Image (cartoon, rainbow, N blue to C red; front, side, top):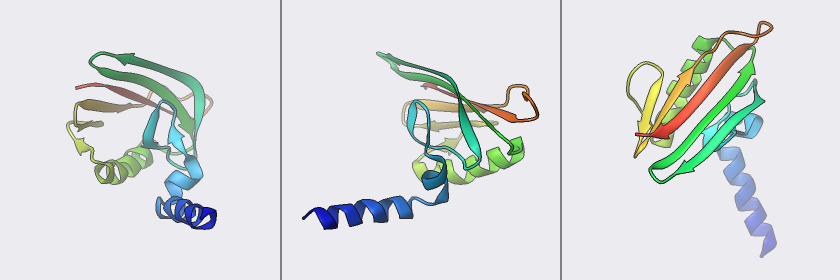
Length: 117
């Protein structure tokens, strides 16, 4: 019985696509794929409040802001998010904002901020 379960898990990982397999997920937002080429900086805050979760995470990499926005514009709707303004998405009772703090050492910084809607 173990072999079929392993095969199903492997098939799910392969079907998830290169972004999920290569980059994993954004710290604190376990259902938000991390774009390949971006890495966690260690800057992450997660709070669970009665009104919902609040997460702030910073990642960085050599991708341009335009490439990052294009990746998430294509990925987020598949995960149930809908665009709601510049660099903002909503899903159920949550809002996700994608921001670009100043570059450090020529690397693009990407800040994800998730909060209750």
